[in-house]
Image (cartoon, rainbow, N blue to C red; front, side, top):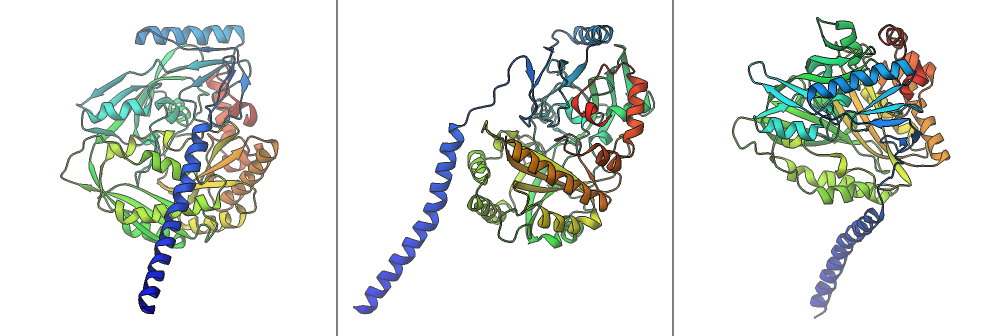
Length: 492
């Protein structure tokens, strides 16, 4: 009888423990869901411009949205440029508005909304897509999918405009690949005189290199000829490891393996064992199977788990546990290339008007990756900032853009922080950013320019020595400085 009671008590205790283990995350995620749905979207006054940071509200002169046929669009922009030049007005060029440093804003400036430039024309004979600069990747990916083609290089989300992606010279998550500049055959540009020019590696070659990663300072990109590739069916493979072994595993599993179509790494950001663990995700090309464009699934759950990590040590622990739990479930699953590329930022984006999510990115030579992880381990915990994510990307040397960030083969550290919209939080973020920029520079690395303008002018000049000539050439191609933004204002 005593044995039976003991067994019953043990079973009850185990069941109680199981209920507690299950109940806590359910309650936590339920609270996160309620809070997430209580938040409202950010409102921007019509006479003001802002960007993805939500910290750059600036009074503007007007916002112009050209409309009509392709020729009418080009004519409207040419006339606008000529008029602005004659009247001493300044133009900033806006796509999807996902930069964070005022790159699409100028005080009392004219904001040129490029949304109307969204044509899509595929030339199957040469494998090139001509795409309007205002088109979003969310339009491009499904269009190419109907042709069983795929974008060669783009960001991990489809919410960005093509012109914006070219202007920041984005990189993707294809291993062994340089930034998007390497996939651009040619582009058309309206210059500071209102003239329509064709720019490529042979024609207007210097201007071409300046426009790639030129942040809209050299003219209005009308359209771009992009090299595309075949869509493919991939099989997922994930491996858990110590973060210090990430590069070793990447070299053995991914580097030089032409069967791997996509790959990225993720490092844990929870307090326990901060940055000591990593997961390498790679996607191996399969020859058979459907490439139907499907949703990636679990979007609401993934959003709850991600947003639950904001300001919560438990939320961060839960997210990393979820990431590790998903490894055996993800392994062997199949995804089309386009499926992986066809997800928007809404899965992650912040709905809280009192805070903002801020991106950093540092490009570190492969042999110095572990040293930079050590820097992050020493600097971030004491910085009064809230780190939400670190993703690792393989980026090969950029041979095309004038102001290149990948001047050798590098690993991109993509850091995402949540930040309150307060003076103190902004100060703390700026202090950390400057420390990380200095650390990256000492490791022969660079930082990415589309984000907050926290780098000092001296830091910019040190990390980007080509910046001096970049701005001299700005004077050459746009002597009246008709194309302007806050980035130019700070670092010129």
